[in-house]
Image (tube, rainbow, N blue to C red; front, side, top):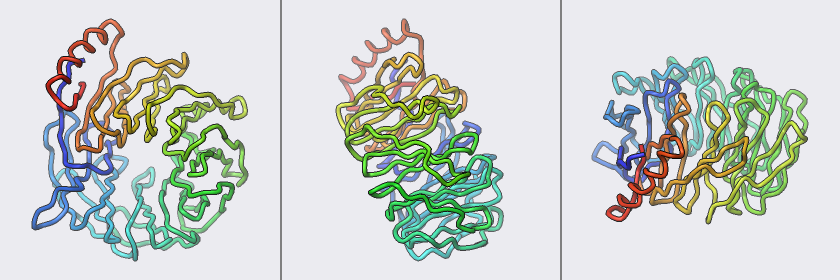
Length: 360
């Protein structure tokens, strides 16, 4: 790999990768003008594709399934719907009475769900931006909302320590209790049969949401869970926590867990490659680590110069994106071991002259 700075931002928040792998959308938390907050859309190659403007800070960009639109959520309680081709805002979604913490498109792109600190979820028409209905049931701030891959259910979680399941019409189907602290994370398996949740109580739960029962209670971490996800085939789950460890959970063997490896500080994000063979983890120790899942070994690691905020794999599985807290987006590509040895030498030389290194 040849170290090369592809993008430099000012304190980015959330970063989203379009489903077709052609664009990155991110918000710039410290970039202001007289017109307010900027949300920018960039080509995957690093060339500027367009700029979207948002009135208030705190946006969370999400792409539609066909990559043609972006929805952004704000601390002012609104959402905005953007046309990626023109860069224009096509709808302003008003209704929440508090900051919007999470939003997502339905798998077919017809609906948008949002979750707010006003303790509600809202469903919106993704074409017109019209509010469809309000979902009430949480007793505290909503932290995360997602659609199941088959589009038949919505999951939400929050500070009330519950995970709730809703149907697309907005009716509450089930409230899942089991965690003893705030639930910030939830994720569906690819076949929409299981739901994974991670909590500040250092535990994870795997729920069979068709039965509304806990399938596995995953224990092993000694600090709050900050990241979790299913493997593409649903046979594994991964988690990262403030205890500095990355753990793999074998769901085919009753949720048996093992430490895959460690960072020197809090693990803040982790993600499986599209084929499930590889796993990347990022931490506040400024390192990104690439793991071979089947061999359960560290393949290589990259120093990015700042605490890692997010990780996203390109659909090809050959490249992944890293966002750090100092405002850099790094595009990293897997490589054969013989090439990596030569690249490490170049990286060391590059880092002697710069405070960061980006590998492409």
